[in-house]
Structure formats: structure tokens, C-alpha cells
Length: 137
Picture 1: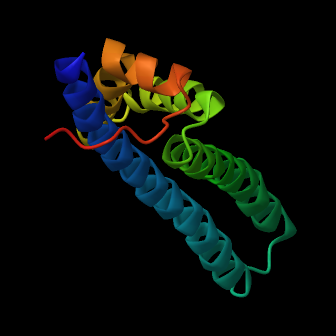
Picture 2: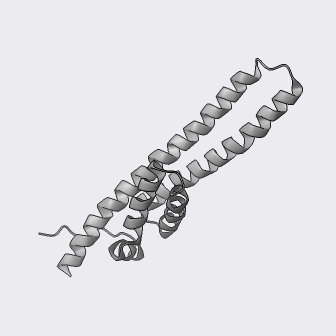
Picture 3: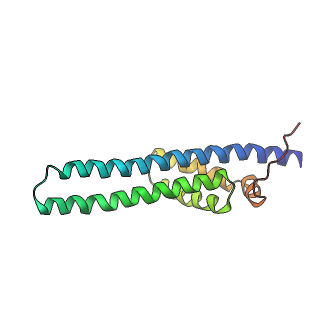
């Protein structure tokens, strides 16, 4: 029992690290979406051709949408992990699995987050609602 509590406390620290990683990378994606909006807006000032403007919009809108949605989902999942919500764990697992395709940083981040969130101690922690366990003496 005592050893299980120690493992849960250790995994709680890993969950917090995973949550912070998700929030930081999600915020970077949102920032990237904003940079794209400003960059394309700046570039549109120098374009007179209506067809080129349409192409810029066709390129910008999906990029901003994807970056914004993925970033928001990552931030929400990270906050869900910090508050020990089971939906946060599931959302973060999904986003980490999708991040595996982003070689090499996304792969490393995804493998670590998936490893943390599928451990039996982590699953047990989320089933209990992450109640604070008393420190082990």
C-alpha cells in the first residue's frame, strides 16, 4: 500500500510535467496561428492581384484553423491534466498520439506523454480524482 502511494505521488509529478509540456506547446501553436495571420495580413498590403489575394486566403485560413484548434485542444488537455479531469487525460492522449507524426520533437513529447498517461498508477490516480495523498514518511 505504502509503495503504491509512493508510485502515485511520483506519477503525479510526471502528470504535472506532461500538462505543462502540453500547455507550452499548445500556446506555441496558438502563437504560430497569430503570427501567420499577421504575416499574411502584412503580405496582402503589397499584393494588387485579386487572384493572388484569394490564394493567400486559401492558404492562410486552413493553417490558422488547424494551428488554432490543435493549440487550443492541447492547452485544454493540459489544464484538464492539472485539474485531474479524466477528459483531460483522454484529450491529451489523443493529442500526444497525433503529435507523434511531428518528427522529432513531437515524437519525443508524444512518447513521454503517452508513457506517463497509460501507467497503471496514473490511471488509478485519475480514477480517484487525484486526491492529494499524504506524503510518505
